[in-house]
Length: 125
Image 1 (cartoon, rainbow, N blue to C red):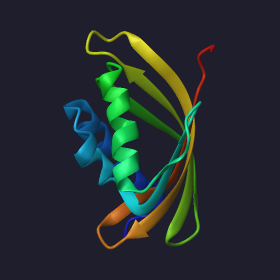
Image 2 (cartoon, one colour):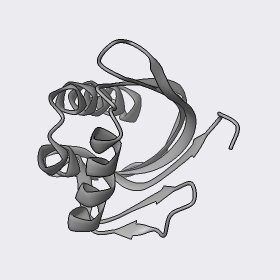
Image 3 (tube, rainbow, N blue to C red):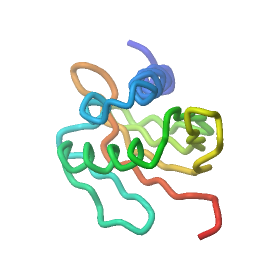
C-alpha cells in the first residue's frame, strides 16, 4: 500500500489533470460523499453536488490550470492532513489566484478523497 503522501500526490495529479479539462462534475468525484469545501467569502459547500457548483464558479471565473504544491502531509492511517499552496491561472497563463490550503483526506476503496478542503487566497481583497 502506498503511503498517505504518495496517495495524496497521485490524487493531486489527477485533480490537476481534471481541472485542466474544466469539468466540475468529474472534479467533484475527487471529493468524498460527505465532503465540505470552505472558500473565502462563501458559505460552506457541503456534499459533492454543492462542491461541484463551487468548483464550476472557478471555471466560470476563467481558471484553466490549478497547480497544487504539497508542503506537508501528516498520516493518521485512513485519514491524513495536507498543508499546501495552490496557483490558479487563466488559459493565457495570467495569475488568477495564489492560495494556501489545508485538506483533511479520507482513504476510500478507490483511493484518497478530499474530505474537508479549506482554501484561502493570498491576494489582497
